[in-house]
Image (cartoon, rainbow, N blue to C red):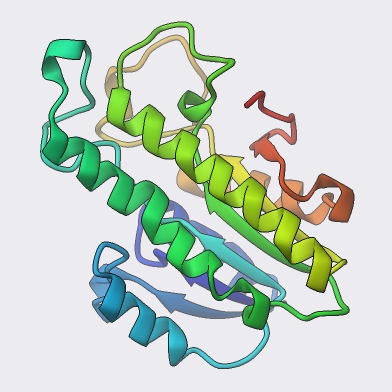
Length: 219
Protein backbone atom coordinates (compact mmCIF):
# COMPACT_ATOMS: atom_id res chain seq x y z
CA UNK A 1 0.00 0.00 0.00
CA UNK A 2 1.35 3.39 -1.02
CA UNK A 3 -0.66 6.32 0.27
CA UNK A 4 -0.67 10.09 -0.04
CA UNK A 5 -2.14 11.76 3.03
CA UNK A 6 -3.08 15.43 2.77
CA UNK A 7 -3.28 16.92 6.24
CA UNK A 8 -0.95 14.28 7.65
CA UNK A 9 -0.13 16.22 10.82
CA UNK A 10 -3.74 16.68 11.91
CA UNK A 11 -5.49 14.33 14.34
CA UNK A 12 -7.28 12.14 11.80
CA UNK A 13 -4.64 12.47 9.08
CA UNK A 14 -1.88 11.43 11.47
CA UNK A 15 -3.97 8.52 12.71
CA UNK A 16 -4.62 7.30 9.16
CA UNK A 17 -0.90 7.54 8.37
CA UNK A 18 0.00 5.64 11.56
CA UNK A 19 -2.50 2.88 10.79
CA UNK A 20 -1.10 2.42 7.29
CA UNK A 21 2.52 2.45 8.44
CA UNK A 22 1.71 -0.16 11.12
CA UNK A 23 0.40 -2.39 8.32
CA UNK A 24 3.63 -1.95 6.37
CA UNK A 25 2.40 0.73 4.03
CA UNK A 26 4.43 3.59 2.61
CA UNK A 27 3.02 7.01 3.41
CA UNK A 28 3.80 10.31 1.71
CA UNK A 29 2.38 13.14 3.78
CA UNK A 30 1.71 16.80 3.17
CA UNK A 31 0.56 19.16 5.90
CA UNK A 32 0.62 22.77 6.97
CA UNK A 33 2.66 22.01 10.08
CA UNK A 34 5.14 19.60 8.53
CA UNK A 35 5.56 20.97 5.02
CA UNK A 36 3.92 24.38 4.92
CA UNK A 37 1.26 22.88 2.68
CA UNK A 38 -1.73 25.25 2.73
CA UNK A 39 -4.85 24.23 0.79
CA UNK A 40 -6.07 27.83 1.02
CA UNK A 41 -3.09 29.05 -1.03
CA UNK A 42 -3.86 27.66 -4.51
CA UNK A 43 -0.57 28.59 -6.19
CA UNK A 44 1.61 27.20 -3.41
CA UNK A 45 -0.52 24.07 -3.04
CA UNK A 46 -0.38 23.45 -6.78
CA UNK A 47 3.40 23.74 -6.80
CA UNK A 48 3.77 21.21 -3.97
CA UNK A 49 1.27 18.78 -5.47
CA UNK A 50 2.97 19.00 -8.86
CA UNK A 51 6.23 17.96 -7.18
CA UNK A 52 4.70 14.73 -5.84
CA UNK A 53 5.73 11.79 -8.02
CA UNK A 54 4.39 8.30 -8.44
CA UNK A 55 1.16 6.38 -8.30
CA UNK A 56 -0.75 5.77 -5.07
CA UNK A 57 -3.17 3.09 -3.93
CA UNK A 58 -4.84 5.68 -1.70
CA UNK A 59 -5.09 9.46 -1.71
CA UNK A 60 -6.69 10.59 1.55
CA UNK A 61 -7.61 14.25 2.10
CA UNK A 62 -7.92 14.86 5.83
CA UNK A 63 -7.94 18.65 5.84
CA UNK A 64 -10.87 20.67 7.15
CA UNK A 65 -12.04 23.19 9.71
CA UNK A 66 -15.18 23.63 11.80
CA UNK A 67 -14.60 27.37 12.08
CA UNK A 68 -11.92 29.70 10.73
CA UNK A 69 -12.64 33.31 11.67
CA UNK A 70 -14.97 32.53 14.60
CA UNK A 71 -14.78 30.58 17.85
CA UNK A 72 -17.32 28.09 16.49
CA UNK A 73 -19.91 27.48 13.73
CA UNK A 74 -22.78 29.93 13.33
CA UNK A 75 -25.90 29.09 15.34
CA UNK A 76 -28.29 31.52 13.65
CA UNK A 77 -28.76 33.59 10.50
CA UNK A 78 -27.71 36.72 12.37
CA UNK A 79 -24.25 35.15 12.80
CA UNK A 80 -23.63 34.74 9.06
CA UNK A 81 -20.69 36.64 7.58
CA UNK A 82 -19.03 36.64 4.19
CA UNK A 83 -15.54 36.24 5.65
CA UNK A 84 -16.28 33.02 7.54
CA UNK A 85 -18.24 31.55 4.66
CA UNK A 86 -15.45 32.25 2.17
CA UNK A 87 -12.85 30.84 4.56
CA UNK A 88 -14.89 27.66 5.09
CA UNK A 89 -15.25 27.08 1.37
CA UNK A 90 -11.52 27.66 0.86
CA UNK A 91 -10.59 24.99 3.43
CA UNK A 92 -13.41 22.47 3.09
CA UNK A 93 -14.32 22.54 -0.59
CA UNK A 94 -11.79 24.35 -2.78
CA UNK A 95 -8.74 22.84 -1.08
CA UNK A 96 -9.81 19.20 -1.54
CA UNK A 97 -10.89 20.02 -5.11
CA UNK A 98 -7.35 21.19 -5.90
CA UNK A 99 -6.05 17.83 -4.68
CA UNK A 100 -8.71 15.91 -6.61
CA UNK A 101 -7.55 17.72 -9.72
CA UNK A 102 -4.39 15.57 -9.53
CA UNK A 103 -6.20 12.27 -9.00
CA UNK A 104 -5.95 11.16 -12.64
CA UNK A 105 -2.15 11.03 -12.39
CA UNK A 106 -2.00 9.89 -8.75
CA UNK A 107 -4.15 6.80 -9.36
CA UNK A 108 -3.34 3.83 -11.62
CA UNK A 109 -5.45 3.71 -14.78
CA UNK A 110 -6.08 -0.03 -14.85
CA UNK A 111 -5.77 -0.97 -11.19
CA UNK A 112 -7.84 -0.18 -8.12
CA UNK A 113 -7.03 3.20 -6.62
CA UNK A 114 -8.92 5.16 -3.97
CA UNK A 115 -9.45 8.88 -3.49
CA UNK A 116 -11.18 9.74 -0.22
CA UNK A 117 -11.96 13.11 1.32
CA UNK A 118 -13.18 13.86 4.83
CA UNK A 119 -16.66 15.28 4.72
CA UNK A 120 -19.19 15.40 7.57
CA UNK A 121 -22.72 14.18 8.15
CA UNK A 122 -23.80 17.76 8.75
CA UNK A 123 -23.02 18.38 5.07
CA UNK A 124 -26.00 16.18 4.21
CA UNK A 125 -29.00 18.21 3.07
CA UNK A 126 -31.41 15.31 3.56
CA UNK A 127 -30.16 14.65 7.11
CA UNK A 128 -30.28 18.28 8.23
CA UNK A 129 -32.87 18.50 10.99
CA UNK A 130 -31.20 20.87 13.44
CA UNK A 131 -30.19 23.83 11.26
CA UNK A 132 -27.33 26.17 12.13
CA UNK A 133 -23.68 25.70 11.20
CA UNK A 134 -24.36 27.44 7.89
CA UNK A 135 -20.86 27.83 6.47
CA UNK A 136 -19.61 24.44 7.61
CA UNK A 137 -22.70 22.62 6.32
CA UNK A 138 -22.62 24.43 2.99
CA UNK A 139 -18.89 23.90 2.41
CA UNK A 140 -19.14 20.18 3.16
CA UNK A 141 -22.19 19.86 0.90
CA UNK A 142 -20.11 21.51 -1.83
CA UNK A 143 -17.29 19.04 -1.17
CA UNK A 144 -19.74 16.14 -1.56
CA UNK A 145 -20.79 17.46 -4.96
CA UNK A 146 -17.17 17.89 -6.02
CA UNK A 147 -16.32 14.32 -5.01
CA UNK A 148 -19.41 12.91 -6.72
CA UNK A 149 -18.69 14.81 -9.92
CA UNK A 150 -15.01 13.85 -9.86
CA UNK A 151 -15.97 10.18 -9.48
CA UNK A 152 -18.00 10.32 -12.69
CA UNK A 153 -15.06 11.70 -14.66
CA UNK A 154 -12.51 9.36 -13.07
CA UNK A 155 -14.62 6.31 -13.96
CA UNK A 156 -14.14 7.08 -17.66
CA UNK A 157 -10.34 6.92 -17.57
CA UNK A 158 -9.81 4.89 -14.36
CA UNK A 159 -12.56 2.24 -14.42
CA UNK A 160 -11.39 0.55 -11.19
CA UNK A 161 -11.12 3.76 -9.19
CA UNK A 162 -13.10 4.56 -6.05
CA UNK A 163 -13.73 8.23 -5.25
CA UNK A 164 -15.76 8.87 -2.08
CA UNK A 165 -16.58 11.29 0.72
CA UNK A 166 -16.29 10.00 4.29
CA UNK A 167 -17.92 10.97 7.58
CA UNK A 168 -15.38 10.15 10.32
CA UNK A 169 -17.84 10.19 13.21
CA UNK A 170 -17.63 12.47 16.22
CA UNK A 171 -13.94 12.31 17.06
CA UNK A 172 -12.78 13.20 20.57
CA UNK A 173 -11.44 16.76 20.63
CA UNK A 174 -11.77 19.76 22.90
CA UNK A 175 -14.50 21.07 20.63
CA UNK A 176 -16.63 17.90 20.67
CA UNK A 177 -16.39 17.63 24.47
CA UNK A 178 -19.47 19.85 24.59
CA UNK A 179 -21.47 17.45 22.40
CA UNK A 180 -23.40 14.87 24.40
CA UNK A 181 -25.57 11.93 23.44
CA UNK A 182 -23.45 10.56 20.62
CA UNK A 183 -20.72 8.02 20.11
CA UNK A 184 -17.26 9.48 20.53
CA UNK A 185 -14.31 7.93 18.72
CA UNK A 186 -10.62 8.45 19.20
CA UNK A 187 -8.75 9.53 16.08
CA UNK A 188 -7.18 6.06 15.91
CA UNK A 189 -10.59 4.35 16.10
CA UNK A 190 -12.03 6.61 13.44
CA UNK A 191 -9.04 6.05 11.15
CA UNK A 192 -9.21 2.26 11.54
CA UNK A 193 -12.92 2.17 10.81
CA UNK A 194 -12.68 4.43 7.77
CA UNK A 195 -9.82 2.38 6.32
CA UNK A 196 -11.90 -0.77 6.82
CA UNK A 197 -14.78 0.90 4.97
CA UNK A 198 -12.51 1.88 2.10
CA UNK A 199 -11.16 -1.67 1.82
CA UNK A 200 -14.70 -2.91 1.21
CA UNK A 201 -15.67 -0.41 -1.48
CA UNK A 202 -15.53 -1.06 -5.20
CA UNK A 203 -16.02 0.94 -8.40
CA UNK A 204 -19.82 0.64 -8.08
CA UNK A 205 -19.58 2.60 -4.81
CA UNK A 206 -17.56 5.43 -6.35
CA UNK A 207 -19.16 8.82 -5.98
CA UNK A 208 -20.82 7.86 -2.71
CA UNK A 209 -20.86 9.35 0.78
CA UNK A 210 -20.18 6.85 3.59
CA UNK A 211 -19.83 7.03 7.34
CA UNK A 212 -17.21 5.32 9.52
CA UNK A 213 -19.50 2.29 9.92
CA UNK A 214 -19.83 1.79 6.16
CA UNK A 215 -23.39 3.10 5.97
CA UNK A 216 -24.25 5.35 3.04
CA UNK A 217 -25.17 8.88 4.07
CA UNK A 218 -28.06 10.58 2.28
CA UNK A 219 -27.10 13.58 0.16
